[in-house]
Amino acid sequence: MYKQMKRYLPVLLLAVAGFLNTPSAMASSHREAPLISNDPIADNTDLYVFRSPDDTNTVTIIANYIPFERPEGGPNWYTFGQNVRYEIHIKNDATTKGDDITYRFTFKSVNEDPTTFFNIRLGKQNLKTMWILSKSKSGGAFTVVDSGAVPPPNIGPRSIDNTVLGLGQSYSTIMKNAIKTVSTGETVFCGPVDDPFFVDLAGAFDLGNFRYKGNPDNVAVDGVARTNVHSICIKIPISKLLKSGTGAATNILDPSYVIGVWASASRPSIKTLSTTGGNATYNTTWVQVSRLGMPLTNEVIIPVGMKDKWNAMTPDSDAQFAKYFSNPELALYMDSSKYASAVPSLSALRLQRKSLGAYDFGYSRSGLYPLKGNAALAGTALDDKVFGTILLPDSNSPRSVDILPIFYTGVPNLAPYQLATGKGGNPLAAGKPFINNFLPTLGDMIRLNMATPVTDRTSKDFNSLGIVSAAVLGLTDSRYNGNTNIQAIPNMDGFPNGRRLEDDVTTIEMQAVGGVALAAIGLWYDDYVPGKTPTVVTKRLKGVLGFTAGPTANDAAFQTSFPYVAAPWRGYDYALLVK
Image (cartoon, rainbow, N blue to C red; front, side):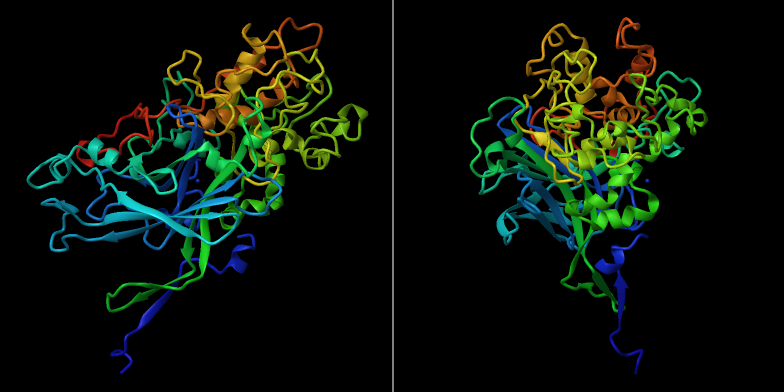
């Protein structure tokens, strides 16, 4: 009788939230935590936030999911999950709790011809997928906005282009036709695309043993080259992203134009499978299983034992993780008193141990903490009355002054966070402004100042090193280093002020851990001696600026208009290339 009964096998996809609140791989966020590595459909891979280069009154947000999609991955091709909530979260007001705007995408798939094992045949699609967009403001109820079609996988010429057996259209036409302007004014595309990230995965995971450019013995390879992801792209008018009452920007660093963005995926907490082959059933309790703000956070900052917990949290709970940003593990391999000699590929990245003869930013050292309470901090961001209790918390959090704000608060247009230009050797003095994406929520998000001008992608000044490049120009280029005025320095709109598709975030973040941001504001490397060294661009600084983490550009050209990401690789044409 027991065998004749219809039986169900409960499968606990995730532990309940209480369990996730207890402690329990570097391709931005590809397979970055133990639990989510077993659920790729719900796995955030990358998040991009930038002013649209061809439509500058808008901001484009691109949230990617499903890592390492092989272009020939049939017969069950990759698609968005039907029992997943994919969400894009936006903050425009640091005084509120939770999201100020939330976009929620859900997906439904149908088989148009279940009699065939092919995904596409005779003009019909199996796993034909539709997206449904809902929107919430200020934590209110979600309202359905619109729906649209997800393009099929780019299988091959007979499935896509052929007019007899296939869909009879070019893939570029299919992709273009999937772009939709929804009822509330946003423009949306959801579908498979080339993975726009680029990184030397093998070198990164071998304890930071990056295979550097020009090494004939071990050439760096882009570990995500010729793989696809599924992308949610949304182009939003800037006017819709501003908090209520915000007028025209007062300047290109107007603090009221800063937003913070993060993306997530949530699953029903319990899935029940049927032994008779019927459809699975799900309960109605949703649990966040993945999230992403700044690239590489969970991969290289959060330790293994905390990664699943991190994925289950929201940014308003991130204060508990601050210590990992204030004293990041990677600094161990750039500190000559620790393990720097064991990782020669990072030899160009050596921390300031005695900057200006006094300040030690080595692993677990004091950083700027010796200045705590000093009258010289009055009115700066390090003043306890401003934000100093976070940025100077104790005597063994050396990077709370640079890495922590880059990831957790954004960087204010306030001393000491201005370029050394015009400071006269005093890093606490007012200098040349070059960034203001300060949104002090103490949580991991990509922060973007929407007033900052767009750098023309065709300009000779355009550079994938983002703010690092802007800092170099502001310090050394005669167009910008002769005054302390606010000027539109090229690449001020680059990472970490937002994140453009072209930005080499791995190199930027490795240089940042190596102290380049400290140097930019006047906390120079140890080989600079005030009054004796003829230039602040010393051998050590040049070495850091010359470091690259391997591949420095994507393996496919980006589109010049929305959705900007490249079309997905075609499985039929796929060939593994070694660069």
